[in-house]
Length: 190
Length: 289
Image 1 (tube, each protein chain N blue to C red):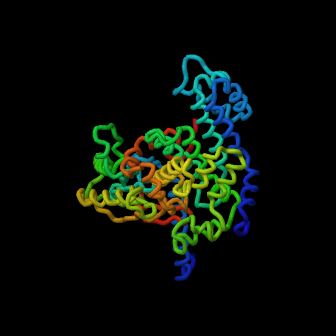
Image 2: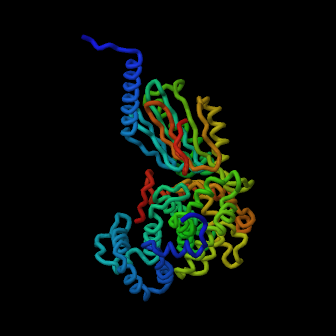
């Protein structure tokens, strides 16, 4: 004889199931491998169950791209705004925003992402105390990113820049969420 | 520790931390001296098994190795030269001290070590480019510039949390908050520690004045300004920067007086970063040798 299902027991079951699913999802998320992106470097991932992470942005910019339909993501950790200061020298393209961003976008499209489906988020650009003449990399980087994002018509959906904080970021390639860690503060998602 | 105790208490507490870089001044003196000092240097290095191992590993690394293996410190000294040897010793000894897990400044384990290493490399680079100081001296000054903060964190001051919570709403800079909440500045702790360990006056002045080089006596203002500039560039690069990092005021007058220029500092960053990345992996692991 089938047991009687009351409305409250039904909701209890649903809530139990939901909590199990959530904890399973959390466990899966916790176990996802992390690809580390160094300073002046970029990485892409076509594997949905991965994180892309970079530590301690300081005044650098961390730029993430994510195609949520195809679960293809990329991250750039650029230190300086423009390679133009280093004309004629051998440069690392990912060191600079004006060379690193086009390079990362090209790599993503080659890996199968579609430009119109790519969403961009930008982090970092921390600034030292106000000074007119020194240590302005943070603001120069933000200005350059603003310019490039307009020129390249990037779909920038999140800006977590400026301020006086050192940010560490982690892109969940499954969801496109970016987890931000700041010293002495709890993590938050952008 | 409940609140701000006096400066001396912090210094006393720090005495109990193992591996303090107290033999550095002696090594620096030997590295600057004649070849007859090499025997003494060998003896000093042999007293510390970890350091001796690092020196031998470096001498036999792909970068320095020749057909013949270095079997002892004496061979390693000849192969590496006293300057390289000193650099290894300084990094190993200071690094070992600075990687103790401590609470404060929002640091993860090893953060102060990563940041100090970056300051040291920035200082060494600018010293060479601008002829401001001997590169080994600049490197060491960068490594030890913030020992006082490490001591404060080691002493486990709850007052550090108070500073974190009140900057920037009540205090514009970290220094201001330290003065009011602790009753002294971390630079005073650095000064006291370095004096206790017998460091030369140059380093004591750097520890005391690197945040405010304009206040440094003329004779040591250049190197204090060099570390001031190196500190801010390293902060922008980001490695190991804690919650306090961006709350220090640049001393524009001192920077201009010594001849620093913003564009030139930015232009040096690719070279600085290449050096840093020889010692710090993308995941933050530190490899001194």
